[in-house]
Length: 204
Image 1: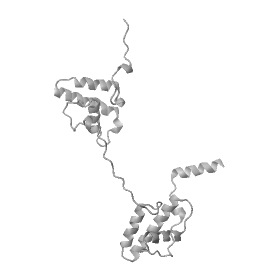
Image 2: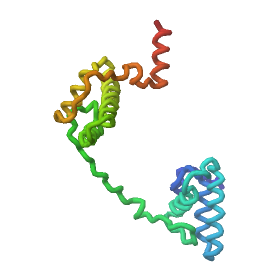
Image 3: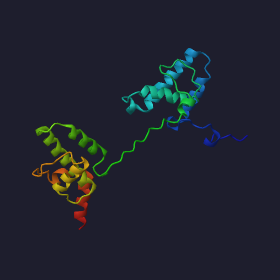
Image 4: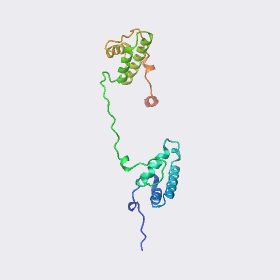
């Protein structure tokens, strides 16, 4: 009599493959236990086994709750035990996420962004004085930084001042004697960019 081999193709599908076949078999056996208290103890034992498989995740928020959710999924949502958390249902997991409304704003200069235009509106409301002048100067430096991030070419301070006056509808007048920060101080060079520059120099 030929021995019947147990191939993966003849086995049932694994609902959560990351836990493996043996644990899935344990879950199937747990479902056959008739006594509810004993079945609950078996479920808690399985949770301990599952937690031991991923000890590096123990400090994650809601780690145990997620394990119970996984156990319910592996039991094909037929986990009739006294669980410490509300167990998920198949219908709940299949619910489509609520669509997040997309807010579209008309932005005159996209390289400055929507928040800059909102900031200009707030500065317009400020009373004239040193605080408002400082706010305008800080705004100008931020706009210069964003311009340089969008376009690596140099931009004059006067061009930034002109954009502020246009975006504010002429309500903000910039002191033309203000000297903005240099391009080198404003541009943030990422470590990867520094590395790529060094490589280019070595290749030459």
